[in-house]
Image 1 (tube, rainbow, N blue to C red):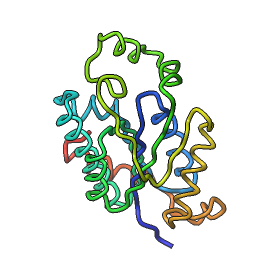
Image 2 (cartoon, rainbow, N blue to C red; image 1 turned 180 degrees about the horizontal axis):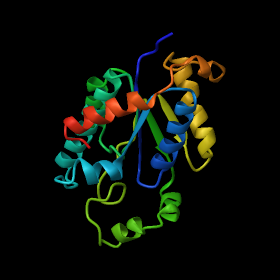
Image 3 (tube, helix red, strand yellow; image 1 turned 135 degrees about the horizontal axis):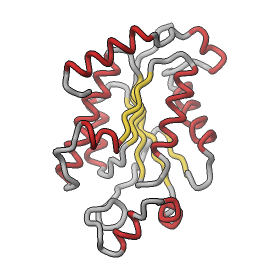
Length: 205
């Protein structure tokens, strides 16, 4: 049975675990035979949105660009796993309208824990006034009110978080049960080459 491609958009404050969870989720979906591409916030900033700053308008544009790529991947049959702070409710509502199969995953975590996890010290610098427009300190984060999946990453391990996401994807009919993964079509090297060439032709790689 052919299932539609979809986008899992992982949102949350800096250091809430988006990249770690996104990497693990990508691996799990690939193990089930699904074609998957992860789009990580830091990499996107560097490769696709280096012309943008951190104003509200620039953050919005950044997310719309990522949504465009994610939706293109979905149309080609590739699952997108997006790891972005995406702090504004208005932006996320627009993403939901733009992406046909949109799954919002909210990673929640107390500020104290986020500061403890922050090996780069960005939170402490923001609290000291050394960094401006830092989400959660001097720029707002508007938590999702009704995400498809919400996880407290100070209470759940990464595997538990990923399982909660895949459980939802199964219940929504977007992926089959784990036992059925051998029946899914594999993501071949030829398919990967085609996707990369299309992205390159569009100027995204």
